[in-house]
Length: 580
Figure: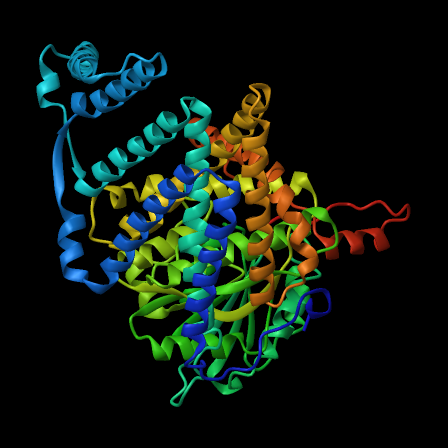
């Protein structure tokens, strides 16, 4: 298997999950929580642990309870409140005034009453002045989901709690950062461990075996597409129930010729004018007939049991319409690629496993993703109006009422190996994410999609708009606190953060069979990388607002640069191909 010599191992053959796996996952999660509390009791202020515990308990209990009492929570999350604009604004104004009075030591019962009156008055005056007609503020209302108001008030209370306990804005920043961090440590990670131990091995496929269509979209993938086909053909899924279609999307290199050399029984190669990846995928859907549609990027290599894992999972879960895969980085040859390897383990794959518990994995990745054909038909196929067609089609499948889950099927993919190429990739990813959120913004205001509305879209909004900038604010707050003479408190928080982060890294790497040599990359992952990510997100939002050029940028590739080196007389690389 390509990449297996460069990685931490492969998944075992398909067998039935061990019944005790769930219990092991629960115990591991409990041990992690208890250990973090014990160490945190020595290094962190008690008010910080208490506040974060309340936040995690509130969020986690609501989400988990909504799985148990579905009908009741459908009604609860579906309730809407007609809220005037001036009331929403007054909450922020009153909070700001109250914090300012507390800061100067003048906040008391009588001043609090007058602060409320003043805040409401200011809000009404401002909204009236901004209205197109005098008095229209009374008719300016939003029908917001009730739970968003509760979350908003809770977030305001959390910020106020941090400010009140420390008397400084930096306290509020630290509290917000640790609240997000503990949501990950005490909720997301235990869910991921629970899912991993319970579904580490997919149920085996049973007869009658469904037909599987593997579609490989390819654009300038010379040096990759042939090996991609070889790995698909090495699958342990019955050959007579499998077809492979390579769709060459107008490549300008030798992609088509390389694919044609593999054509034969069960493998078809089709070439079309360049129109983008979504067109290539829709073309493939029209030319194939399999009950299960598997998408494999031409630069990715699947494990032999990947297709069997997909089929077995679909057969065991009739309500599931899409399956995400376990994505591994195979070209971990420098700091940039090793950093991404740890990011996949701690971030992308961990969150997908946690979302799997709710049947709402947000993205079926293009490097290896699977759908029931009827689910793709319900979703209307692939659209070309966003840069992340995989995120878009997954959202459409979820909106159509299907579950989307995680499969143990493993795929090895190539990650960008320079900061320049990583910037280009993440710029496209984040711009596409913003485009998808805007395209499906109706999800924010209606609960017909359940966890897409309650969990997935709020999570993406949080990660896009809050987490990177909170990270920047935390670094600024650290500098301010050090300059103010609070070095001991800052050192305790940072020591705890690094200790727990390294512990999580070891745990996650062991669970996925990766090397613990990647643990030191946790430090740049949570210090340097958030600054990089904040810059990328800012540029992504700016590109969307100004409707900048949406073409895919060229990214350098190992195999293609090596080929160019051999072909060039002076040994200079001529660059790699670009994706759709």
